[in-house]
Length: 374
Image 1 (cartoon, rainbow, N blue to C red):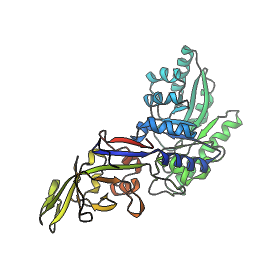
Image 2 (image 1 turned 90 degrees about the horizontal axis):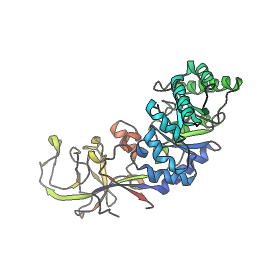
Image 3 (image 1 turned 180 degrees about the vertical axis):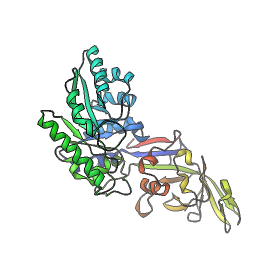
Image 4 (image 1 turned 135 degrees about the vertical axis):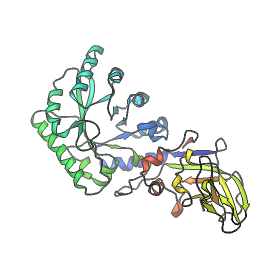
């Protein structure tokens, strides 16, 4: 049904979200699921998505920074800041019982000092850099640093985690080495009496490709993109997931143009013969990849209507040869649909030469989010 309140809107299927969560939970059981909801749930709208997952039984939420974490606190699930934390963010993180990353001795000392002043015990997770090269305690220094840090007061070291940059590649030696080195660290720490309640290294790709990352000693996984029903194009698809997103707009113009008419910026397409042409009210500002120009298609009345010319910021021109009865105002499916003609997030990602996260994060601010069930 056309949403007459907006020219372009994104339908987020919360039923499919619940289905995907259940599939992931069943695959990794008895480990728990930490739902990663960075960047406003990758632009899909964190409030409704987080509430749905909390009701479904997610064990916690993972975010990138403090403000994202504070927004989720009221849902009654642990909230973990997965990236780095700035010194001036520590007091509010401690006061609100957020799970705080420890990336070095300095941050551990600052957290301890702050917790002492507030009369609290800070809840922390050690972030170990096993090969991501971005944040955390380097694996070569991890045992010494962690042994020093666990002696610092006012901190409860609840967990330890790492990240896998190449887990989308099945049987990757780099990834296997990361997992082995992390396990060796855990074993060495255990011999010295240091253990953790939560141990996690698996991201969405690892859940698909590396089952060893959700069996002992690991007892939690972090997943974001799989909850949306998407996969990395290079990885395995071991779970039957459903896409939760459908991007729709409306047909704003229907015209019959003569042979030779040029369409769009740069005049990259000229009609070889007279044709019925439509303009839809969505462009790259709404999330349509520029790479759809002269290559992609949308669905009108379930039929593929190919993009003619270059996608512009606000509008995209399409062929209406398959739907000659199309009228101005009709609903257009830009992303989604059913059956063999379904336009998937993964297809757009491959066409654009990127990955699913980039597609999902690109839906513009004027795109209305609509949730099903409402």
